Length: 273
Picture: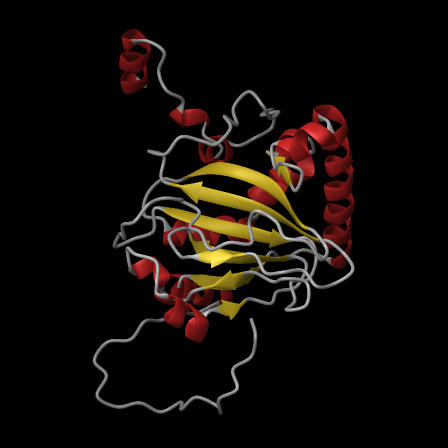
């Protein structure tokens, strides 16, 4: 995150009857998401694991473009996205089930949650792109909730810097139904700088946008959206990933327990189970 130009914050306080506790870096990230709508969370990867994911990302991108046709993807404005990364490489299935990530999401979303989507995102060098506009990751929705319904987790394949278009956020905008005025956006928007191997966590109702990449290289990331099971997945994950060896808990997060029953008999059987 870009550094404040203000002096150090006071550490003493008085007249306080209640205070939130945060005893580790995961709880600190959770507290910040609840209050401001965003935080940076380290995935806990080694340098070798970060580099391996970078190579896997490029490999999946090449295969995806060959499979679907780069011209066809450009015609749909899909050439900077790779849908459901885990369907192409198991490394991204493991990324979605990262322990630190799931611990944070589990504290933020009350009760059960599932993975809605996992998409590779490329911010091109010195070009505009479709994520460079303010939006929520539950788009077109104008309401707020007392607890998060969905959490965005953007894994940084590359360092996110001001120069390469690090994500802009409008702090605490997940607490207001309407989008802010242009003046408030100008005064309060922030860019979040993060290192490769870190997640940028967002309440999905917070307004955010990709910045302009003024560097000479693309900026790459893998976006995850987790939500309560009442929302359908962007692309159905069961049937598109190899579930052999997955735990019951992992299958639940991937949506295997929440497929729509095809018949009344199937529904009643699910209730019995």
